[in-house]
Image (cartoon, rainbow over all chains, first blue to last red; front, side, top):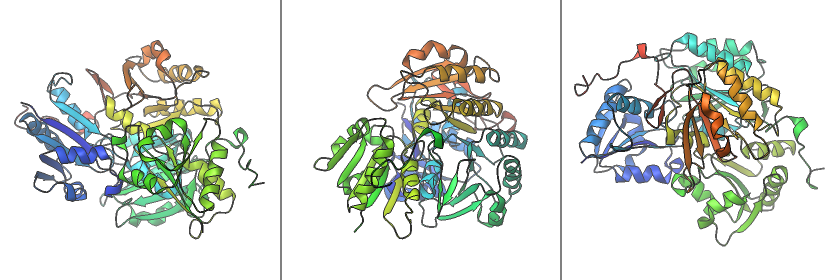
Length: 261
Length: 261
């Protein structure tokens, strides 16, 4: 009998921000697979289970192993932080299954359990930057040619999208964010608010509020657990917050309450 | 003494997909505010609390009332579905507070509690469409002029972003999605996969997989609880799923495992 495969998002990293469904799926599983760091995030839930830890560069093998283990009758949770449906493992699992002729209707049960994504958790920490249309772009050119990424940054800038940047830099890869900043500066003011959020809701969380002009001064804090949110033409700073109004001023009026003349 | 204000996202609507933190905040609160529908989603958690239900068009008054109630010493949860940080009430609360000179450091405690957003929940139901860069655009022109929305759709199309469309239509507003489709078709094939997700994870959930060419045939199902996901040039359909590969084929190889020659 075939087992079950759960692709589980555990949210930003603190168990408070995990969903009930994610916890339930992990508890129901006999086998847990994930990056070392992600497995660590759920260590309180997985005692006594078979645990497979992976390094960062073995995604294709990991997807295949998850499928093989579930096919052998196990209940498997592939865990990751944030939401596995956003730049996560859901894609590689479905790609592999599709290549092998899997039938969702009659074949093994596969379920993506969404989590609070990095874009949601990071936005919640810095104010309300995502009240308007936004674009999400990853700076990683491991899987996508840089020319395509650059074209997307330009399109996001032209469309005046608030721009959420995933994977802004790694130890070996720092040039991309600097180039993206140059492209954005062709269309946005240097005073455009920018937030850098590192390790959202984890013990070592740190946040820097800066602007597009000064972003390069913070290059040393950028890394794989960082997300960068670049405001659009409507974004403003208020104390340590980054706020996007919910629409154009002509379309609504604040302060209609008697308490706020 | 001032109270506390929680802006709580309860996720797509089924309590399984709520976070522990959201439940905790609601339980801790003595006062619950929200749209009728959203309050209904958490009815099991709010017995004995003071409950304020709102209609759809009173957001400014609602924001002010939340602030007033919290200032009077109450612990208030403003509840909404999905993530309040994405086109949600977080913005109007911070805008109003900023206008009134609130100081996050010394003033009333305000906390945005992120939830599983509609984009995450809808993507998880239809496969893995968000494995690549994506743009999120709302079709509602109540607060934003249509010309700006149209420009954004065009930019998303030019940038080859997977495009997530919020608020695709309402009873009175159907023209916008038809126009967006026309703009997208200038840059994408009619065979581009499109998913329409209605009431994700609710009892009445319904999903239609179609393509950009045939989208108009499904106009009757579109409404305010719908999200539409339009693929990009890499998106493919596999049975009832919409899959985006995690990168460009030249950049990785599937099937390196011995089990998949």
